[in-house]
Length: 116
Length: 116
Length: 150
Length: 150
Ligand SMILES: Nc1ncnc2c1ncn2[C@@H]1O[C@H](COP(=O)(O)OP(=O)(O)O)[C@@H](O)[C@H]1O
Ligand SMILES: Nc1ncnc2c1ncn2[C@@H]1O[C@H](COP(=O)(O)OP(=O)(O)O)[C@@H](O)[C@H]1O
Image 1 (tube, rainbow over the protein chains, first blue to last red):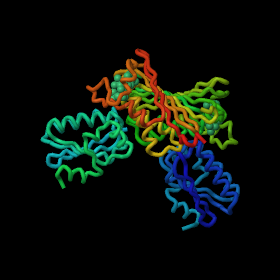
Image 2 (tube, protein in one colour):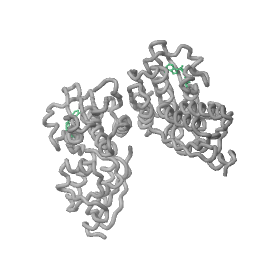
Image 3 (cartoon, chains in turn orange, purple, red, cyan):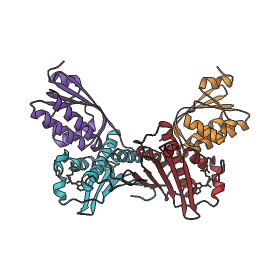
Image 4 (cartoon, rainbow over the protein chains, first blue to last red):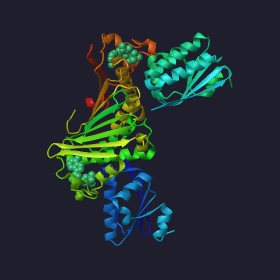
């Protein structure tokens, strides 16, 4: 019933790893942490890893879309990786895959962003 | 919310290992399985290992006392081992330690029963 | 649902966001003996989260004095989950059901709650009255439809 | 308890033994944000199990048409748990509270339920009426008594 947000910068890429449950209650923490990091550093792209995210609902979609808008407004890009089947369907239903790229693993995603 | 009962015979000792939760709902399963095994085989002693028992309430005390009476009526003995702190207090409150021996591990208990 | 074989629970709790996770766990624990696979259980937790969050954010507009009610029933054929609030109600239900429609974009709401409930469950009905509250009734079948046709 | 800072939940469910585990998980999940250590949480799960089992076995004598109610409140000072049934009631409460006393030895009951509830909680009160039911009210303090004396 809680969310751990782990952030790591590799060059101009911010890797955000989520561990736990992303719902309305925990989405506020994620929003403020990511917002701050994007505003205060010279991050250009965001890689969001959902490998250890055990639960997400539409509040998660909202906060992810919000950060997508923030990063693309700065000319950057967002990639999401390691999505479990039920969370995958949430992205699908919302049409978010039409704008946000999705990859199977962090390695593949970093490759697309020109690293590793 | 379920109980796994694993039984192994070593000589005339029946080792019963409990995995899960022992409450009123699951105690019936334990009672019938142990009762059958004690009646149908030439088991003399019972070693009850609670190492993987994550929950127990007073329904568990009842079924353990019932099996203690069954095995001592046949001239045998019962030893309980690997009890966690909260379950330990249940035994203590009930006075069961006055009649049932308790050991830290299966090895120690088997030693007392003259094996290993 | 057949009376004898039915199991039920009713849950009533404070409209606080920290209770969202509790509500999901309680419903999942209640349904744990049913033949639901992991994905189906996740779907049920998701729709519970959607409806409870809506009650808290939209129904009560984050006034924690409100209360959210969940009733759950099951028998061998289906699971029924009803989630209610005594909040502000919904003015235009057809509009509210549209994918991406939200009245709270400033809270970064995605407007996908009702769409997810409809897609993850076999039945999703909304009953609402302005100033009185909202009731969401959802059903998930446990038996494949083909089997019922025999 | 202070109103503003209090959280509550009420749970009502069928008096079926398979709901005993559900009741424990629901109460533990509701209290998960409190500063309780693992042993204290186990103690609370144990007393919930004792009172719910008593309602099912003694209160309703295993008639699954009965319902068990659990209400839980907490604030920063204490957790209060009330468990009720509308069953047969208890004729002699003093006798019932005695360690090892049971009216159902044929079911291998240990007669330790009330003793455990008393020992694991800071307050345990029984209210009962023959033919109307039984209500067990238990409190566990979150703050050490010494601190309250300052
Ligand atoms: N319980 C409720 N009480 C009042 N209004 C509600 C309730 N649930 C939903 N609504 C309305 O329906 C709209 C759509 O809901 P939903 O699809 O869940 O999206 P979101 O919650 O992201 O806004 C909400 O924006 C709100 O206006
Ligand atoms: N909810 C209840 N309704 C009716 N009688 C009860 C209830 N709870 C307890 N009792 C009575 O009190 C006695 C003692 O209860 P307890 O200490 O929990 O031991 P046990 O459940 O092992 O009998 C029971 O045997 C029963 O006669």
